[in-house]
Image 1 (tube, rainbow, N blue to C red):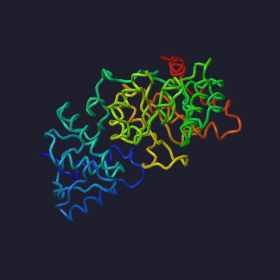
Image 2: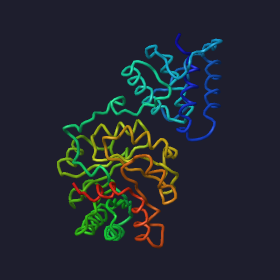
Image 3: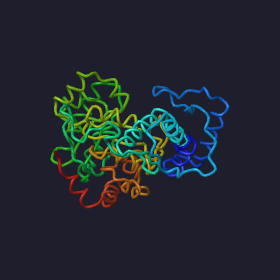
Image 4: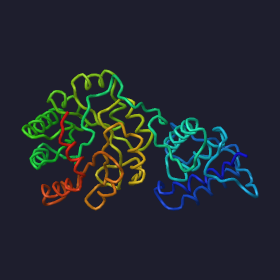
Length: 354
């Protein structure tokens, strides 16, 4: 006998409560079903909706006196199963667009394995529609393990951290003056010459091409603003491309352009910039890194020495820091301390510039 929508949703929430961003996932699920019971014609929010609460279609059936185990269900994927996953994902604080990605991946996993398993959170790239091999239009590769990745405000900081041995650097120079941007980007490229440091330029891709930078990093809005011709120009110039992401939907959007690496965040709270999404935490970071196992990945957002062990335990290939370096009186010493936390094999791979 197939399980009820409510039984499956509760099994998912119970098995994956560590993915919630705040306590009380079971209470939020209770509230969802209470609302659904009062309004059975409510429809699920479409993926393009702004971040709002998902609605659960229909009212859960009464539980049988002797219910089957809620952990697995040999019935084919049904609309009720889909709604159970969506309700559970909402209770676990995933945004609607990300909940849709989770449901689609879980459906693919169920069809591939022959049964639904509430314990098996989807983490296989193929279930999210990601190919195992790079696409023909992929950007130039970078090391799978980028090591310590320092995000820095100007060329002087770039040179300082390059000389300190930081393997991966990003110039995040904020200016609306194209001449000032071009000057700073050229200075940053010159600052890493003679060192093994890999330099990415944040946002300013035209200046990065002109200066001969190693790569460029784009946020989601910047990526969406680029035309096909713009992306082709970056690729043709041989620049590596890094893309930010803040959840499953943005991860898949980034992966679609076959970048050199994908950044995952914000892992922890940060006041450096206004974030559209709440901190994702190390448990979600682990799931994201598993889905993107074929891409180099960079954890970013509020990372410092105190939380570094949890970040590295996620399996992510690199971690980015901002204030942990530029906010300390001895950044060179801090850089060495942060790099000493890296596994030996990761350090060796981070030293390979492709």
